Image (cartoon, rainbow, N blue to C red; front, side, top):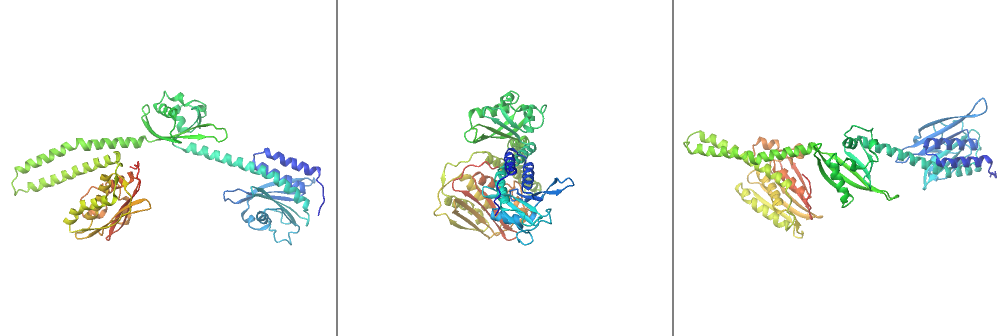
Length: 536
């Protein structure tokens, strides 16, 4: 065993490694560690396997030393992926054992497997792990063409070097990762179409993206990232746009929780925004502030306003002409002989007019249900609600010689707070559809139960069924299947859309299963404690 004492060169090496703690350039740190270690022990070539983390491959960085005519040394740094180098050979053994190892003769030691790019004439090797928090961060491997070249003293020296250098490598890695994340964040901000503002606790702009800068500054000044606006109070822009004044008023009032959702319209720009204000806080300095994100929804709101105008037109301005058509048809019919073909034409006009009137009524009703508040004040017996829906539809079934079978498992179910009129209408709608799309004499099954905090309601028929490719569109407004259109079954295509709206506003969901020619099963579930949802 070597009893060598530390030399001045060894102390110089440790001092050099200590200086690396202040270096944050990862490549520079690695190059200096590899070169200094190889120089200190006289290795002909050195290689470092670096664990990149995040389940990525290890990276091999090696520098070769070659004699030159002047007797000095040169180095050629190279970087490449290590591939399977960590799964076999000396570095892999060191990673598993988490301790240094010496190979006195590569021809006889099974642990030695040449690493691509290293000296093929290597006869001895030394590998030292860089360990951080119990995990191997890197492995330094040094080789020499002379057998039994490396001694225990070399191993001890480089182990001390590795212990110091590990901190430098980790610091450089963390710094690189921080730079990468900063670049990713900057790219996200530049690509983000929404307005984004970060304020400190006094309302001063700390960060903003291009859309926010253009909104505040009308796009007339400043470079990318809003550099000219940083450090300015947001209140400087309140007089130019009412939106900013409203946001500042909410900030002054304080947030009830960690976030505040709002909708605001800029009268000056005629733009609508959906926004969120969130709190941010630094656990180190204790400072805090606000993050404001505003999404431009002007097109959606313009469409909504147009829709409301059309519905207003439908519910008011179109009813008078329809009433006049019906009135004049009735007058003409009074003066028309019983055997005149004109009576048949008048009936066609009346049926079509009534159909238009029913469609207008359905449109207005759907919109009222979507916008009006739910009546969730009553505790309702779900079992009784199902029974009432079945009883209300029974005359329709009897007129078509159809039967309704109920399979209810609600004896131990709790009461539920819901809007009984709307949920009852949804139940009856599914029952009505089952009758409408089934042949006379058929049987329809109604199932309802309570399980896992949910109330379930389902209607099963053995009617015409629905093609699989049409199932995803069933709950869309005005959608009617091909078979329904071909068989001229009456309807507007709004019933299932209405059911979906009502159920989702209660916090539940709808579903359908069907096979063409064999029948369908429609159902929905409701939570035991519904709260009004904003689902459309």
